[in-house]
Length: 191
Image (cartoon, rainbow, N blue to C red):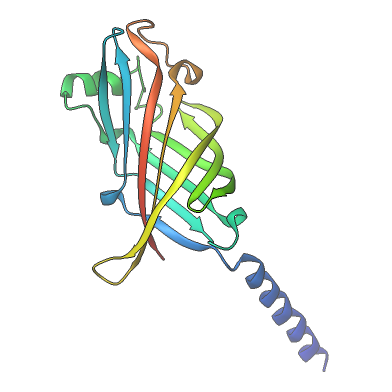
């Protein structure tokens, strides 16, 4: 009798734990259909544009409960591309990103609030060049769809600005702007 009572307690605990975590679906980023684009002003004249592709990470999404929504994204500086191999090598070097010491740029949300039908205010920690700062971005849900293999897909995008000096990237002040405009498009597959 005591064993069956213990079994009932264990079973109840498992059911409650499952119910507490239920609701949010896990989506894994599709690196082929997700990318980051950045621009920075050069010599107070034009802008240099670049891509950092193939991000990895997950999106936890619950349409009914925004508090369960979360984003974890990492991009490798191996995928940095400004369409100029010499500039790319320079940017990955010790004077800029220092990709050998800091090989990724990472973002992890700490809170999410729904602010519109398909819009979320996302607060999170951005780690760049070994420095972590809390930022707030507006994330737009761009849609949901079904892939060619029947998988469920979800998309989000955002654009925001960071100040490179906040992340100890001080090379060429004046020649290279401090404001870096970043656009991120994410597409993820339900697991």
